[in-house]
Length: 84
Image 1: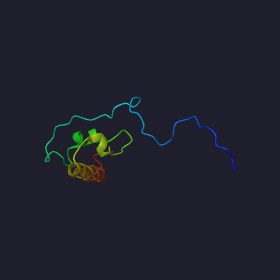
Image 2: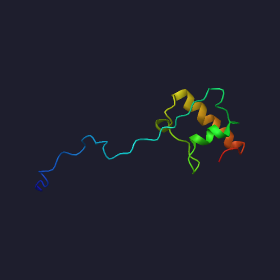
Image 3: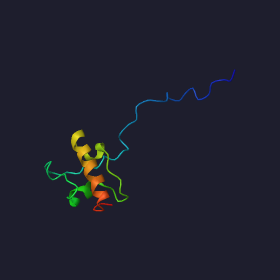
Image 4: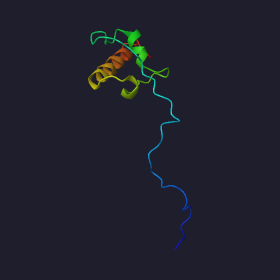
């Protein structure tokens, strides 16, 4: 049998500390549900990265139903060639 090594180290799988992490950027955007439309490209560009990826819900801090409407509006604007 192989002998155990590194017995003095802590157990793996513990909780990670958040001291080294930077906080997530949370955009402070006030808008109504009516403004969440595929024609409102100024608003939609705030939720898309430079590479064209849609920001996830943990970064946008939107409720789930608003995030779904946002995703649908961004995808429609992409089909209309309004947003990258």
